[in-house]
Image (cartoon, rainbow, N blue to C red):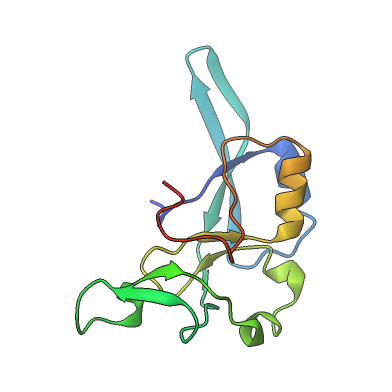
Length: 138
C-alpha cells in the first residue's frame, strides 16, 4: 500500500507539521492497536513524491548492478545539491524522501528535528546529512 519507509505521528506532531506547506506528503488517519486497546490519535506520514536533490558529483555511491539507471544506485554518503534546494521554499521541503537513489531515505529539516528532540519524541533516530553513512540507520 505504501512505498518504503515512513512513520506514524501523534496529534501534537500533526499540529506542528500542519504549520508547514509540506509538498508530496499526506497525513492519513491511523489507529494504533496495542494489547490494552486501540488509539485513534495518530497519523501515518505518507510521502508520495520524491525530491532528487543529492549532488551526484560529490556524493559517494555504489551502483547496485552494472549498466543500471541512477535510481538503482546506492548512495553511501550524501551531499545535498544546494542549487536545487535553494529554488524550493523552506516550508515546502521540511520533510521529503530522497529521489534518484535506490533507498529513498527520509530527510527532515533541522527545525523539525529540534522540535522532535525538544518534545522528547521517541521511536525515530536522526542523523545530520554530513555525518550519515549508509548502514548507520540499522
